[in-house]
View (tube, rainbow, N blue to C red):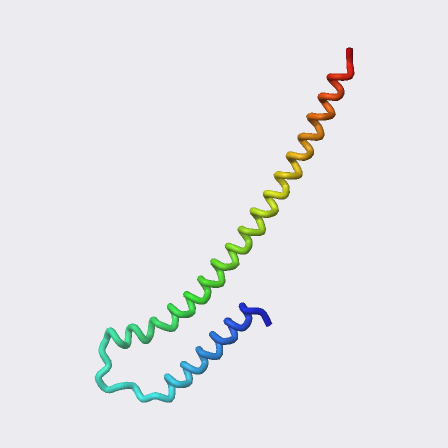
Length: 96
């Protein structure tokens, strides 16, 4: 199991644990509007942070692969152009 799978599994386990704990607790009598707003928005923010983290990490990994492939392609093109230039020089230099 790689690191990504372990982090996702940990996040799922923690979310189920926290939701079970939240359901078993009695709500406080003097709950303010701000506190209830924070507690209702917090799970969505945590989920969004997990998604953003993995999305950005995936994009960076893809960009690194794309840059490496582009660099290799550029080197191949340069070698081919050098071969063509040498062949043209030989052709021009050999004729009287």
